Length: 104
Image (cartoon, rainbow, N blue to C red; front, side, top):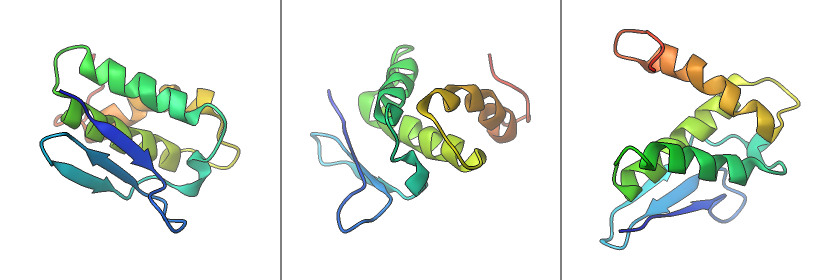
């Protein structure tokens, strides 16, 4: 099984299209324009692999990682660098955890 994440899908839109070979698709609109920075796509790849490794299917892993990627960027102020994104994951997990606790 596979999944594809296409960022900035056409016409200057700041969204992502996540697709799978079985025709599942989702559009994620949480990606702010500040994600257009060097190395940010590499960080997204790391997020996908980190979610995929425990066994989540590729489509859901790609969609979850892409949402986290955009949400992390949204939490950051101006001057975002790719290396800032992973440090924001514990904040997102704390806010979005069912018990508002850091997971892990």
